Image 1 (cartoon, helix red, strand yellow):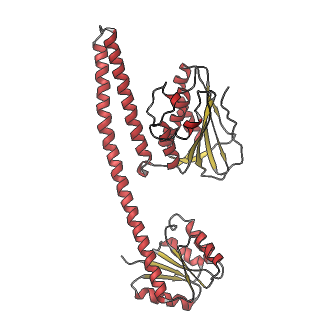
Image 2 (cartoon, rainbow, N blue to C red):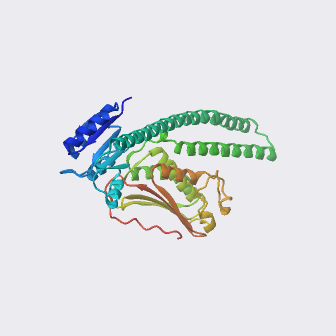
Image 3 (cartoon, rainbow, N blue to C red):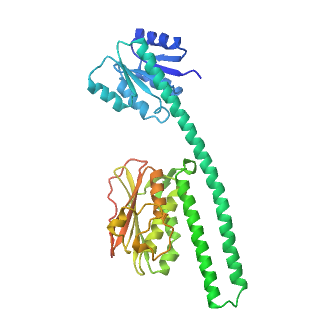
Length: 375
């Protein structure tokens, strides 16, 4: 396939020379004389490479390059600056604007062709790597779907047979009944482990990632509703501390719901009867923060460094059942959204987990509702 090169230079003679040199090598060349024309030409049909003059009337090359970098359809196109500027500060400005290389005027034909060929080859390699990654992601997705079916069905069958035995064998002695009960609990644990492993794998593949702008309050309300029964059975109060204004965020609803479910479930699980779990969220400084605070057992300082590792469980967490993957899933979901998760904790008083996501809209200066551990 013939490479398409866009040349932007206000100097007509330089433009004609470059066009002739590149076309002689078999490239398709589009030539324009201003930054504004160059942006329009690139938007209509993204080129494989752009040769861009720095000093031009009107919009200079630095500005054009920054605008190219801000356009999702163009930011992967390599930009090579052409300039008579030799000050290192100007070169730094160019690289900061997004250029991949510099050619100093007056242009040397051999140098131009070598640099063009080099960056076209790099771009081609990057495109091949992208296609390979997409194919690997697709294969991973198919494997996860197949594994989900192959693992969940046998576990479901085991649980079903245990239930059938429990209903048909009414006159079991206490020991046999206890064995059946233990079998059922272990089957449920295996099912939870399988689900967590598959969910963790899904958060690491982009094919399952479908973000959309969503009102945060609605999702939080839905997830909290799923935990009301368990919280009530332990006498734990669930509270929400919403901001004054609605907060919208770009997220994958299913993945985010699972992450929030894990945080709230843990908060309830490790909070004693009569305690409290609070969920607050806010938009501030270009970031959406969701905080889940509890009055539970807290986390020891040495455990905080490992708390998001797969299969890690703090010493004081073994009194409750779990797979050790819940917080790893939360971290993976946060990273998939370009965000992060952090934790603050005081042993014996409680913990605060903060899920931070990029805001899709103009930052709000409102302060978050205060959250504190302890009663």
